[in-house]
Amino acid sequence: MERLWVFLLLEMFLVSGAARGPPRVSERVAHRQSVRLGRTMKLPCPVEGDPPPLIMWTKDGRNIHSGWTRFRVLQHALRIKEVETDDAGTYICKATNGFGSVNVNYTLIIIDDTGSRGGAVMTNADSEHAPELAGKLVRPRFTQPSKMRKRVIARPVGSSVRLKCTASGNPRPDIVWLKDSRPLADEDGGAGEEGKKKKWTLSLKNLKPEHSGKYTCHVSNRAGEINATYKVEVIQRTNSRPILTGTHPVNTTCGLRRNHIFPV
Image (tube, rainbow, N blue to C red; front, top):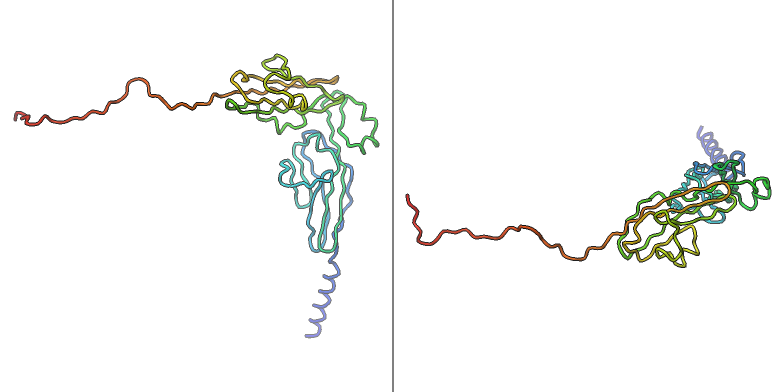
């Protein structure tokens, strides 16, 4: 009986040891994925192994980490929230354990159907396989809406602020900045050379009270136009000590005159 138990334990050990090995893909995957702009996307990573593999995701050769706020690495997938046009590209899920590694590759296409004829944001490889999409008109759309949520901005005198209006479209859209509904020249508002080099971002430096107002980016192409407005409030710094005004309480001393006798 004891020999039988030893035999069974040895057999179980051999079977379990035979199952150990490098990670492997457990199911078939579609390597080309597409998602509409602004939606939430999940790229699956169906891998298994013994020991369980460590999962790492990359985009266009760059490691995806916790600093990518809209990206979250799940146990068997990568989730992307509020998909933007810049999210298009090549994604790789790499699974590694002590025996080896395996990769699952994806090409992600972002579809922008806000225009009258629709459109898509593609990588260079995608355009070779789908040239019919290259000529479609695509209405402008802001590609980084998460960076545009704060529309009312208060800053102290002497500080700076950057207003973003990054957008995409086909043909490539033009942008015009306005202050209180009037076109804003590059030299106005302290934008300077930086404003010329980065047309999607308006930089206001050394803020003064006269910089307060409503700043609007007007983005347009042949397919349509979009606008976004920021309200900037420049606050005066207060360095002086507070001064009391009006009637103030006065310290008084109440006492009895010496040798004064009160009647009984």
